[in-house]
Amino acid sequence: MSPCHGCHAGCCRAFAVPLTGADVLRIERRLGLNFWEFACRWEDHDHAISHGVVPQFFFDDAPGVPFVISLMHAESETFPGTSKCRFLTEQPRTAEHPLGQASCSIHGEHPMACRVFPTRLSDSGQLAVLYDVPAQSHRDPDHEAYRLCPRPWKPDDVDPVDSVANLVVMNFELKFFHQVATSWNRSPQAWAIFPEFLRMVYENRVIKAAPQVDESAVTWPATVPFTPPAFLPRKVA
Image (cartoon, rainbow, N blue to C red; front, side, top):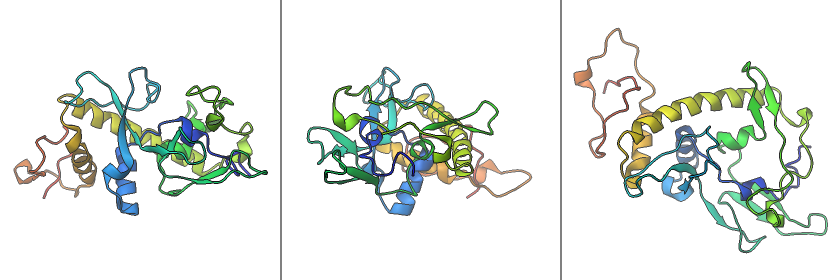
């Protein structure tokens, strides 16, 4: 059994979970949720969330403030006064599990950042490398809610096929999402239209094969005041 078995999920309490655009569309489409029901923007001045890996976004209502698109947090019942991922389901504390137990209510559709924890892709791009998880989060070094993995991870705890596949996909999606951020940040606009921007970008990632595309035939959503990112292939309507 992995360290997650029977855990109170300190990682889902201590960290803001970053989302890619692909994560957003997957959750919206497969779970029937609206962006505003699960996503938020977290200020990230010190790169504590992005770590130089996840892109930051800027918005016209907060000039100069870098944000990371993340899963919302909600109040914890097990640990009053603390927060947890809004998709984390808690179970009461027991003698066997004094910190309680918790599980992801959207497992299978959860973000790539959760799927790859606690691994990174090797320099060769062919191996999953375990990184050390500290015993306690820096969010609050003394609070029991933010204790992390109950024991160190071992290679046997990680699926040798899915782990590498997830890391490869995540790396690919992050590169694309950085391009999305660059396009958006050239002229930051309102947070209110950001979900529509994401949908427009990701829904136009599939095009028909054609020797030449007539750009005069291309149509884009008229309800949102922005132009298609330059890095996207043009989609024929």
